[in-house]
View 1 (cartoon, rainbow, N blue to C red):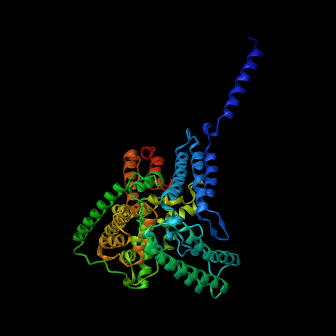
View 2 (cartoon, rainbow, N blue to C red):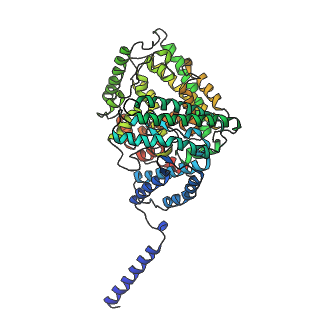
Length: 546
């Protein structure tokens, strides 16, 4: 065959193959990581409700439209072929899948806009120590803690629009709320009482410099009080359970939080941790029986001196014992979030522990170190640079903060504070009690009132007040957000297992510093994904997909 003829035939073959490839549907073509990033950007815009003059649209029509469109978004993600991608890129794909499953669960089960009056929280007074607000996030909430008073003109104008929207938000809420979840309704009444108080405080705060905003805040407060009265009037007709049930709980853990535990495993873990903590506490107290009891800090001067010393000693310990890389922003992050001195008789659980040794909440305060890292050295992936939706970060955030208490004790931080080791056991017992209470509500075994009493009665020393805002607020979060109450101990268990497995995998090359630095480098993502990224072992993720 002549060479020219052969070339013409080759060109025809190439053109035919190219035409066939272009004719294939997108689902059959190899996608790039950039395609995932574009989808993620579009997905986040789709997930947010439309907001008009400060009022998010959570009406039945808007939510139904979003629900019907969700399968198409899942199909677009499924069409992205990750073959040949790096592990970090495949981890990012799993994160987008988890977020889409979170919205799916909202529409099928939680429906916070239609069954949860707590959802309509319009004023947020304080910054959360976690990457984002614990529990469902209402798109119209005003983060008062982000404003600096007196307000700049632009901030005053923005706050005016948002305060003026609160009465209309709550009118929409009355139409949206058609659910029959009694415990959530009861909690919603408590939430709106607190909201009215926050708005009264805001009105007083802005009155000297912004009298027009004070008027806005008072009008918003009146709307909140009317909404609360409406909730109270409707409460007697609410009869249904508020928990999601075992099957739904297990689906959420598996498909949204990518956690290897279901409801039954979490209940067993919490019962075991509670028993272990109480036994350890008894043994520690016997060991320390000749030592004086820990006395609460009595004065503001002593409080400042000891909290300053605790931060400095903690940072020195991390550095000298090569626990992790200590960066310049870590110490200021901890110091900026030390609570003011409060007399012991006014303290609830965490204050009681901290008043006896300020180390306790400095260790759990690793949250603030995590947040400083996200702010100052964000993860290079746009998908991980900010907080994931649906509290998907909880196992890593709360699990690590909780793990630091026991891990640093084991590492020697409290060797010079022997009685403070008792506080670590008390903290674990409390987290086991309150986490178990939340699990039992979702399992239909306790009401919210019973859960509050259970958590209080099973916390040592009577430090968790059954009538306090702390225990009620915790159980509210755990009911609104499945998995949150148990994330402290389930996340801790996952991190402990990962540390042991990584040490065995690396052998003589393992160091604690390497472990914690690698874990932090992975970002605020589920520990199952951190395991995959650190060890190359994706068995947990594969098991979750079965």
